[in-house]
Length: 467
Ligand code: UDX
Ligand code: ADP
Image 1 (spheres, rainbow, N blue to C red):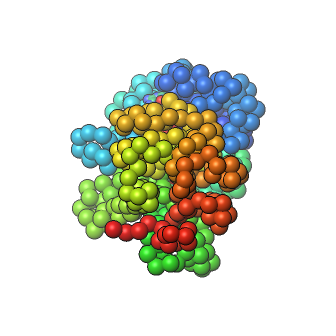
Image 2: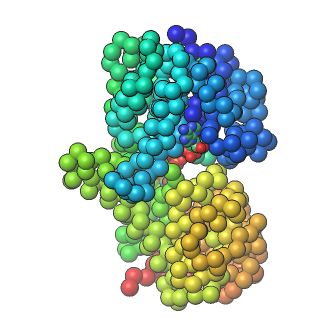
Image 3: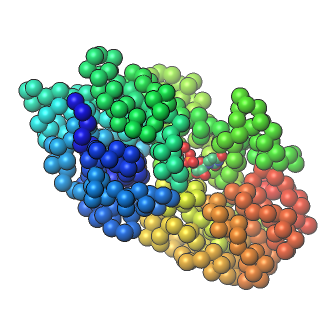
């Protein structure tokens, strides 16, 4: 079989950018991205795409209407395609068995049922969404139980490793592409077909093929390892604050060991995003189900330290502001879970904001890429004592403190002399991302607090005085 038509179920953060790059690099393949959400598809076909991702607009503009299509016509797209990506969302279950930990596979199951119902010819079905180990087996069961005579399915696992904010660069220059499939001759043939698609732009030595379960587990393991590094350095940031060591210096010193490496050692207010927490919770749940409680407890600690870091940071803000933030105006700089994205899923800003609102603060929130509707959605159920601003400068007016939650570059370039003038005194800055020039800010007159380092601001020496 030669792949001429690809269908992708799910036009989200994974499906949209991935298929746009496939269309760009494979001009002879017709790529159709479908979604049951009409509004999302309308946005993909408009000038304002539903997600902000540097470089994505250009790729979509180049391919849309040529060999890249966005549509809600799921039936036609499944019928026509030889290869179908499943890129639907797999949120953490909110009720029932495994509540709060297991991945909810209802959208994957629905997608499999739709394929079984519609397909009239052989299909290669590729799971792209992060799924629990052995999910491919469930997809296969559904497809096989509903198969029409003469139709063959092959299920492959092809997890996506892109990071938001750098998705296009990650897709174009992937460290590796991972494809898992059955060890049978048919499975190996399907793997080869998918390899052929990626070989349009990825050197074949960077394409790793494994059995299905290794591929599924590798995705969870990769995210668990990355998140573990952040929790490890964040745990040390607390030690630095207590001792006078500087976490950036520690990260630089250990990162120079080539066995450790320098990436993902940036201490912060905590990690966010749609993957890390969800995937580790999922891994923990799987370990418990496999009767491996020690392994489950080990990975759970990565989540626990992340929670600790977010609440430690917020507690430090409250303590520094004379143990009360009631009716104090606090500017929140950044609401996305990292820079260069408008995504707020599991953003540490949500946790910090909610906690400050609980304590009676009045928040003045600004993020360059997150719209007001999204902030309202994330803060639903919390006190309404907040307003959303269109610039960092406006959000700082009359504020007692600025809290940096996202490392947007524009926050580094602001004129802090002017900000100081419009704020209440003493004016505080809590740099949860370690992006500002703290010495310069202290010279202006700010009381500055950051993660993993004691700063000398006149009256106080410790970063977060412990009580
Ligand atoms: C992650 C994985 O990197 C990617 O491979 C996978 O496909 C999806 O999950 P993503 O969540 O988009 O990607 O962003 P990432 O750059 O990994 O950042 C995740 C969180 O960790 C962010 O909140 C970020 O600010 C934080 N982080 C990252 C740190 O706090 N310190 C670091 O050193 C690196
Ligand atoms: P991710 O970050 O994994 O890409 P998103 O939530 O951004 O997750 O995107 C998943 C998309 O999948 C959503 O737009 C959702 O509407 C879509 N979706 C979920 N189930 C189906 C389905 N059965 N058919 C088509 N699209 C689906």
